[in-house]
Image 1: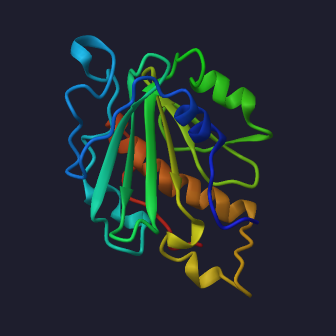
Image 2 (image 1 turned 120 degrees about the vertical axis):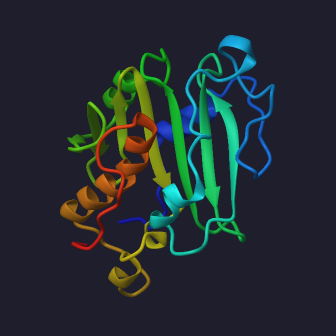
Length: 197
């Protein structure tokens, strides 16, 4: 299995970003960083703090970059990273009904979607992958990482420079990453449980 995590939903969201502008690493978005009402994204992730994602990185979170994404720039991408930008937790939130990268479209583009329980109203990951895509109350959330080995406990699974995660381990990681979505949704478990890796 590849160590680097790249989500097809994430790639689509970046491709479809409209009039996106980055914020400073302070975690607040620029006044022109999105669509929606009043020039601001309708769905946001910049309410998250470093502590909310720190449990998914072995390095210290030192900054966050916020960008408007979505068909009408009505969502946000928040990338929390370390000082060397070697580790990152990448969160995208958009309306679940987005016609290009919404929840139904994302699930249809998955090769073999597997349900992820305990995240939002519904969530899935692709077989062989651990990045969850979740929906709750009309909001879609995806979470991915720069690499699997940045997640505490996964580094111990490296053998000969590779990580070969089982589907059970992928499920554990998906649920752990899904806790970030639950923070955005305001419901469900918000504490990553990685002890059973």
